[in-house]
Length: 247
Image (cartoon, rainbow, N blue to C red; front, top):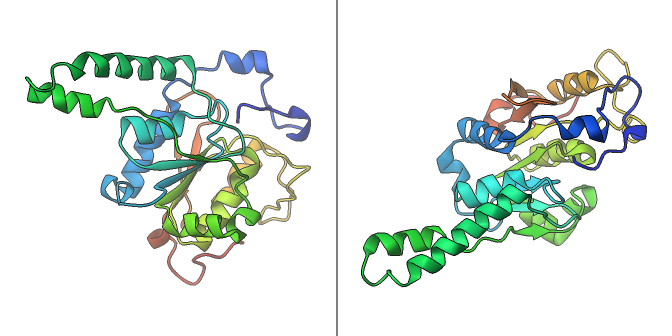
């Protein structure tokens, strides 16, 4: 998501250059995405015991907001699937330092105060869970990938770029809820076609493509700047003769 190759995005894809993109206000976008995920899937479902929790696809690099929000702030298990190692931004590092400092201060008072003990547990050390591989058909075909897809609660991606189609296809195949906030199109890499036979070349084309990719796909627009359309699908929303099929 943060690594842009505008030469592959296609004509008319109106991708801002890095200088313009740097000023786009997207603080809080991960929180809004996760809030919608909770509203759509349900907190009890998302906190179901699972060996891998929610798969956060393309959440590596500096795109770690979703797993940070899920795992640290919401206490929901998540696993990042991305070859790029997770890199926390300054605000996230500051949050971890705050928790670490307070944990050290609370340790001495644990025996005297039940409240101190509870806060000490709350400020536990945190490290993202990650598998550094591509999320694609090879991943699904592997023993590890197949098991993770079977065990996961949902599959999500914030600006997952090249992994967009794989999230949708594999989540539906394994009958798992999915949610994505798409960004780049990559028309030279992916030869997607709209129902009318027109090739997918722009962001609006990509959104139309996702709306029509399977029955039961829904859309919401989140309150942050930039590419803020979110699409999601629930297994029970896609039931019927087209469930799990792609147009």
